[in-house]
Image (cartoon, rainbow, N blue to C red; front, side, top):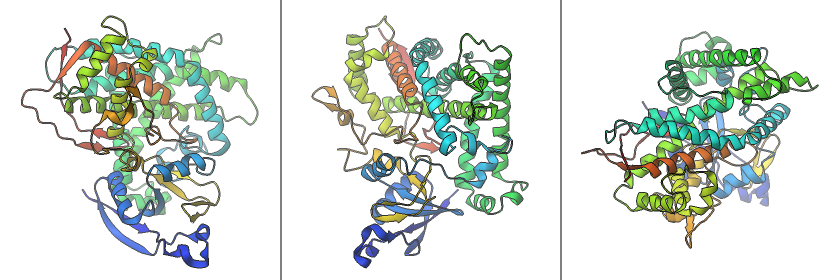
Length: 489
């Protein structure tokens, strides 16, 4: 199906009026056109050549200000981080995440909340994840051994890595939030992962594919709540996810040990019991923040790892995999488990991982931000409550930042044989609302990648033809592909 975005550009000719660029108001009536769009993030990136690094998009009943390019995105998210710190309220999303008393998920969520609630929840989540950071690595190392056994059988036979990688990475976030891992063949576990995947996809369908329904919902939310439509499927998936997590929380309350905390839920329950005044620590916020951690942990990192092997597939006739394995042999060897301390001694492996993450472009559009006050961006006046959309695609493929932006090239991150940090590399976004799970994600990416290349050689199936194609849910995912693994000599 085809999706249409109403694009409005803000002309720069007003800059000369009254000689005051900083007082220019964005005029959404200057240019309008209907753009046929099947890949929103890529289309927005391409529109930069026509409309510049700042333009508006009419999306149903909502208008977004889109900013492109590293310099513009950094200005908004880093230099004006306090101003663009809030999330916008969207009626359809309010309805999707109902069920929290007199509030919605957007009021309480770790990702979607604003103001004091968000600061309190974010601070607690960051401190809690940091306190158990040492166990991150142990959990990932342990899970990597289960993955090795799971992925090695049957040897040499083609398989789709999606199911196996998703199971392994999802078990990490299960261990951190719920306190236990699942057997990969556990029916309840696989039903949960399917539910998460469907939730991600149906949210996109409602938000991007069904703009007429979306616009009607935002215009008449009380009426549309009872009208059949694509969003009804979202509601059903979300209710099932809530039911599952509520059951886990109830079980934790029954056997909570005050002397120690097993996981994130235990830490949160103990914080609730402190009963501080002006505190938003209660079961509603616990449910929201747990869902945030779980949903992001089961979507973004597994997708990033799949991109690693998707890129590896394309490099099988190049020396890249062999160079990574030589570095693994030199630094780690064949018997010891990889650990994060090895990373600083493995510059080439680090460059390959970073370049795969750049080319994978897992989260092409940043989660929308909303301005907390009037501000000026690129000489244009943006009033309070302006909704901002950042194009991370425009950063990852910025011609001014990357020598060969459309080609896989580890040299982008390599200088004199050492890893070179690139400012225009923002896979986890930036600013106050950057991904809170970045440290965990980087640990998973490094250890899973190195342990598999330490033990296996990857081969393309006979007569296989792989094209660089992907699907778009809340992340940019490679289309299903098959690969073979053989034990290394």
